[in-house]
Length: 417
Image (cartoon, rainbow, N blue to C red; front, side, top):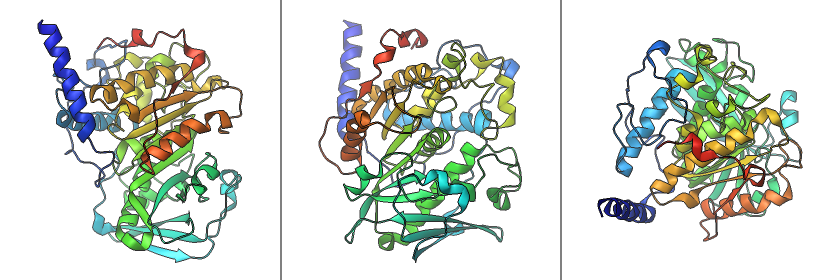
């Protein structure tokens, strides 16, 4: 009887939450910063299975959504400490914005990111000044016809597009597309302490790119807020997308900024959606020891032979997006992406959305038979559903859990919570 009452209470909580939980926020982070204990490697316990995202570092359980917000802040603190470094907190008064008309000048190194993309006619210029030192981020933007405001997707790369996603899906729906020129914040292969962001924060030399790039995305959103009506962007319906290393970037950006309503991580692989623990059991995949350390703190290498001591894992990175929407695409043809690990991670992360009765906000689609970062038309319906629901507010079915090649994978064995 007691067990039944607990189950009924949980179901009641989930049903109530699903009617009330916001789809997006108007703040970068809604919960105050957390300061959990950060033990050294030798003091950390060995945890072979995936850590419970709904258990605080002190062992207490998350019992309400307000507690999840605090736990979310705790996960972010540990992610920054052990993996990526601090994402700087930049006061709004340090940011200014300008909307310039006319085609932007596109550097040659961004040509690979411009495949089949329309040419931008406007540029949002973000200027960030800290202690008298400044950098600019110039983001090309393509507007639909009309006055707006328009939902918008931030696509990783210089060109104003939808990352590696088919631009047609967004242009047909009158969704604006904003390019994020990540190299104006930090290069793909950074030289520590010598990147544009280090002009502002010279002390953050150990920062990984996955702290720096999301910082840049957040400053772009600041700029949209500063421009207000001039931006012609509907700030309540922002999405972000990217593929491969940019898929990881999109995932980190969506996880660390609650103003992003929809995060689309396309083939993010190891260091993205895939969990470090599961990846260790697979073949020639991107593991914690094999990842590109330009993107992470060098000190994360200490876990290369001790992955089970890492107090967090990337199903929790995915879960940081909750209660907002997350869609993960995979491509199992590419072994390096560790998509079996990505599938297990999605399965585990979704438990957080399920806990609050909003599981329709998180989905995944793993499909083989196509090139890397080339979304096949067979996966367009999943993308269209999430775009229609979370960018346009339509009532459509977003129950998306497709991974036919992993039917026999026992994801549950990684979860003991």
